[in-house]
Image (cartoon, rainbow, N blue to C red; front, top):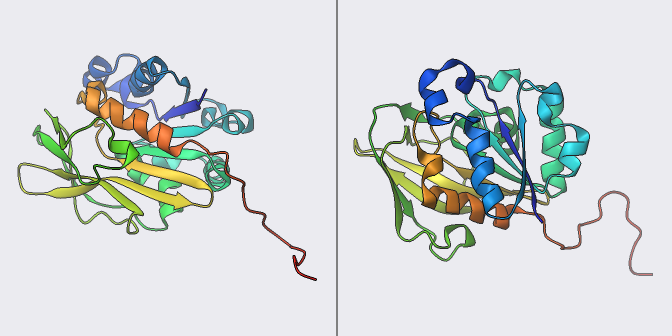
Length: 236
């Protein structure tokens, strides 16, 4: 069974009544609920736990790490970021959600500012599937309509994605590369934009299906890992 750790800052839910009302068990709780129902072994970790809940033991037993953060990116310790970074390079999958684009770990893996345009204007969004044969889009159809979602707009300062999966359109004219994959070392990374803390995106069945598909895509394979370091010649 694929083992998932869902990391959430878990700050807004403690201080903001609108977020509490939308996600009474925390964003991590809602993610864990539908991922557990999908058959994964899902556990959670939050910022204010010792080592942010990401101990060596937890990371060693994580096949795919989901990351949601927003208001306290700088409070994540560099030591924990480095441990997560090394685990991704070693083959752990990473799914970065919504404002996790500005997390230390995503910026470290991308090597860019990961900055973008944004606006909260209570408008809807249409997430277009631009890679319909990709396993992450299985069962999704041509697009996902979201009743409300925070506007994220280009330019999104990331490296060119290995694969572009979704492009979102917003009614005031902006577009955004809202689903992107990357390979770093032996690990696979998926960035997915929906998930503003006061909107119901994580209750949307198609958004849930994308995340479920992404876990199956990002989980480690049984492929033989490369050998690194000093190497004896194969030919005599």
